[in-house]
Length: 47
Image (cartoon, rainbow, N blue to C red; front, side, top):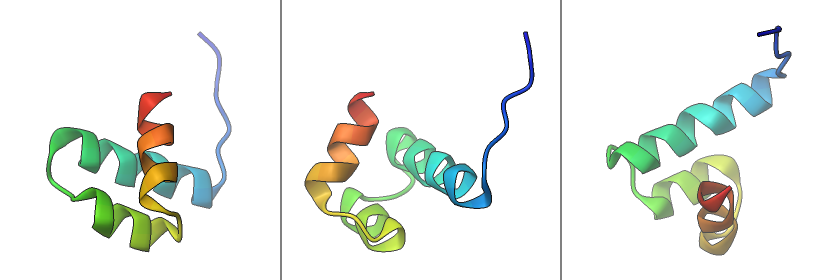
């Protein structure tokens, strides 16, 4: 495996989505933190 370079913003997005996936954070809170809509959060989680 190689290295994956991520910006600070991308890393934050991954961490927040992981918390939603684990049930530690609500979709509404994640949407507010990432400045996205609920629908966009669900779409990101699907990927």
